[in-house]
Image 1 (cartoon, rainbow, N blue to C red):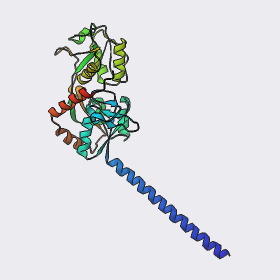
Image 2: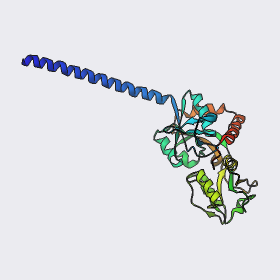
Image 3: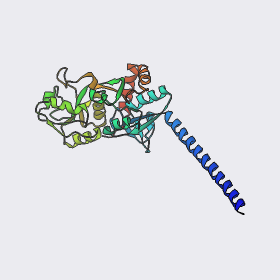
Image 4: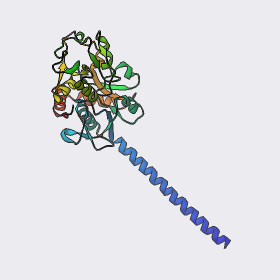
Length: 284
């Protein structure tokens, strides 16, 4: 009986080990399969709240792309550029909606493959991440209330005494200091918040790039865009007003993305921006 019990015990032990081995194999196979899927995607971070560069919408109209983790979709100039890059890489575009301050940490931690969010390749950011070639250039303007004393301003000096703000952690906010006598307000997290503050009278104006200002005035007929006379506007460097794709340091995607961007003509880029401004949501 003892020998028989020992034999049965041994057989059962072998069976358990075989089953355990099979389970481990399946787990590794599943993990490998998961990694394979990740390699077939191009995951991009953006606010999805900075029209016409990027915004959130309820469906996939006009080329909208599903936002990972919720039922909404992202669209805009950045989304369409990201789609062209993903197509060029032979990958599926995945959009991760991320607050502005969280974009660089999301990139450096590997949560996303790239930042395509109207981000300028400043010296400060280049200390932490790399950038592609420039995919858009713009000028700084001011968005104000239509009919206000600042509507029709031609110089930043006209904003002496004005309550002005800009987005948090952007160079837009730093240039406000160039206005002598300005009442610089607390920086705001995003552009929708600034539009609300402007309409309510909490601020007199906010600093923006021309495409966003065109978007704001198209969405709300109570707003006006102030473009400054040459030499009377904000002093900026080319890197401040340029926009590029943010990438991890020494990313193997950089050269590939630059090659894809070279294939998008200036005419095509302008057309994509025109379409983005036309298709932006009517929300304020």
